[in-house]
Image (cartoon, rainbow, N blue to C red):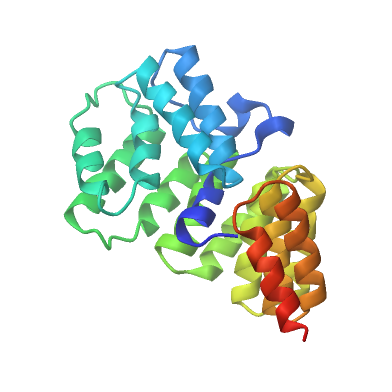
Amino acid sequence: MKTLIALFALLFGCITTIVAQDFYLPVSSKSKAAIAALHRASELYANVHFKDAKAELDKALAEDSNFFMAHVYAVQYGSKADRPALIEKTLALDTKKLTKAEQIMHDFIVNWQKDPNYKPVEDMKALVAAYPKTPQALEWASLHSFYTNKDADAGLDYAQKLAKLSPKYAPNYNTLGYMYVQKKDMENAKAALEKYVELAPNEPNAYDSLAEFYMTNKDYAKSAEYYDKAAAMGLPDAKERADKARAMMK
């Protein structure tokens, strides 16, 4: 699996088993086409299909250039070099009709513009407090806690709550797996990553993540096996990682 952007990318996702309006935070856009495109982008980002996700995000913004939450996605997934311009564009949008969720994210982005190292601890607390039964609020809080704030304990707490609220939301188990690895809880890490594979058997990233787990734990045969599965499903570079795992067996 990938690092910050990939796992932050874990951020949105795989909603085939979840009713979209129940999963996502409310938005102010009235364009059904724009919202549908953003939801597709979300699913793709969550499972590390970045190129296709960006294409769907572009469609959302083409349908509604003032779609605030789509601009939030653009800021969060944009490169570090592009982020200042994306932030400026986002903050230039009209804020009169923003939802509570969008307003919280607006305030976060204002602070991010002032300080690129800003940690949205209170912003994520506010988001979850405002939307305690909305899975996306917990997911954003989990991922920002882990990747932006570097707080695995807070991230784990949010992710565990998300697992209880939406037990079939596959990408969350990927995030859980990596947080457990960081805490050196390999038993729970393995269980979480196996759950990701179980819930998302057609996603190459699920096999890539489990392969990385086995590589970390020096089980090179298992690592090669799962990297091979990811490679067979078209994941770039998985073949090279499988070969590396096989080389470590010698």
